View: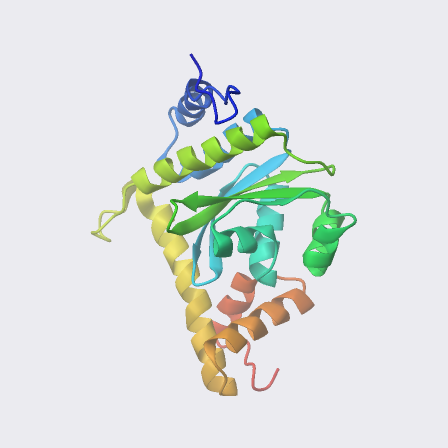
Length: 246
């Protein structure tokens, strides 16, 4: 029998999402698992795309996405440093932006809302990954039309986020860099993250500003030039871009 909530209503059957997750990741390599899980989320919920990111010091690192649109809008939030994903990571609670075309969601994230709708996304539901005390990342669900999640769908989204957390925490971490195997993708993510922070440090030195302002300058430059924060970081680290002469 399916569990009932405090109101006596039946919640989503945990076995159903669990079975879909098991089927979705069967035969997948380690590096494919995050994107596969995003695909399962799209199958289970009324959304058109999904992505998963780990968050560290305000800079999300995208692990996988169900499609190019979801990957783009997730990277857009990382570049802007704003959006439902950032808010969910900071609060540790779900953030439901049900209408990015009008109303309070546009007022809360005006630039992100404009950019997201231009990319065909009209609603975003960001679910925190972690536990009651620590948020390690977000599962971001995207929809091409405005609308809310009903109670059952929200419970399914929470359940999916919980399964995503367990799956990500179970992914192997390689301690010997000489034995990367299928875990090479994890080291690639670490490299990307390190480049952003190395670039931030270089901007701090060039401009004599604090960390927050340096990261904000990096993001602003990325947005103004239509590229990602990681693209700008790579240019700074490679000495193709200096902020004291930009």
